[in-house]
Length: 480
Length: 96
Image (tube, rainbow over all chains, first blue to last red; front, side, top):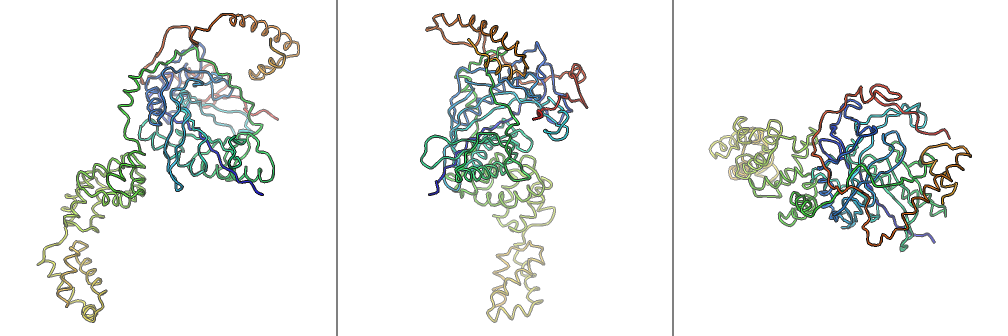
């Protein structure tokens, strides 16, 4: 009989913190500088230099810990993780071993299968390594070039419990984590640019078994979809091995985006023994409860809370709440717009259809776009008051998006005001009736659809500005 | 006491190639150092809080302000090998 297996996944996420200077020296963290321009004796590891901890880095780690419902350590310290690799100029990385800044947290995620709590083991601080450029491929190269600009950029590593049971859950966890960190505004969280990196531990075990199976560590996934695809591939690979009574080997595997498969890195790395020991060049951290409370004060409403509140407070469908809270700025725009036009669902519809379409087409972010709450709100109010038609509103909105002008000014300037003057409308309606005797006959013969045709003709004549309700009513009265 | 195996293991981690004679020598030397340090274990530390630090200092922090970096020429001045403003290291993979 075939065994049923349960998938067990844990994720390790590295996030670059958006500070101005590096974690242990005053070098700039700016992206795009020439190679090794942002370096100094501390971050290239010259002898005799001393690291000094950046306070903001600790603030951010505490913030991340609180957002992930962790306990913040009262006493924390740094340790040296020793290994040789050219991207590490000191031959050790300053990291945290047994006393991380935060531990024992959790985060709620939602997939199509339901709601799950994923444990967060720890959040610790460390320095990033430099960037290696191999001359040719890594296994055939004659040497590697090193840019230490990235070396010493502050990172937090967020380690999850092995609580995820499917690649879809892993993706949902990653999405929620990214959103949360974006709300905190402590990292760019850009996976393509490497400010968010993710490694995954994945194993299978027979359903009901407590002990974990042998795991593979998956690396090199540089998008959310490649995390999911890589994990799916790995689950299938391990299942096939187990089904054929073969063993899964504990190893690091790399995801190959082009080949769509994971490849063993066996033999490409030595057995790890990092010989952690306390970093003697840094003094310990004592994190007072006052410090934690101070940071707690600055914590914004988190995406998951906001999502739930949007559903309960504004009676939005879960889908809408998910889209709107997926971006902090968009959620803010939505809520602010309500104070100008109190119809949440209509606002949500406009944001999710017209606004998102325009953002995608122009590849702009919410904060970079020219739409603001006042503009969107007053425009929707103009539709509601019958000043402009819903159709014209789309034209007005596009103009607002393009120029940032106020809707009233656009309507005025372009002469887009809805025609609700009955004398003026009657004149046009009469003309259309006279020009379309066939349609009139059809209507009189009971073909109601022909009314729509005539309404269309009036709208065309007025370039969409006629009040469609009035036109409809007028036509019915006049033709019958 | 430590064994010759321990010395080989540590040498490997440190990327050191030791001659047979050296391994023997170091097993003895490192062994006696460890034995010496082991004397500390004789102390009664029952009521002593463990610490990793000897100086009574904590929370030495700096503000998040960027300052000028070192001139790149200087950064690279002592590099054994360099190319286009980058440090150059020998190939990483061993030939096996």
